[in-house]
Amino acid sequence: MGKKGGFMGGGMPGNMSNLMKQAQRMQRQMEQQQAEAEAKLADLANQQFTASAGGGAVTVTFTGDGKLSGVKISPDALDPDDAETLEEMITVAVNDGLAKVQAAVDEIEKSAGSGMNGLSGFGF
Image (cartoon, rainbow, N blue to C red; front, side, top):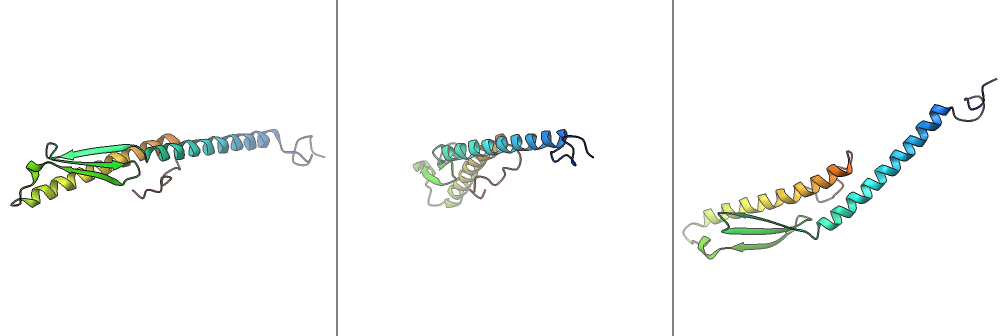
């Protein structure tokens, strides 16, 4: 005959019961962290990230969800005989802007804990 609370007594042993409670508590914490991260990512979409190149000759702005929302090009950067330099400045500015957005997404995912990678769905 088993002891009360043992496997044979019909209940869970004390350690198993504690493990189940810990697992449930951890699950609630993970769900809360995920909900907080999702809320932060939703807020992030409303933020603006600006980057520039060529000493400000090219400035780009992105929303937090990675969409290009603006491009400004200084008239001084418009040289019809040197389109390549302007193209390079645009590329540098765009890549820098996207890196800023990704860094913000990564920070949110990092603060939410491990296992949250890919939460954003932004595909970065």
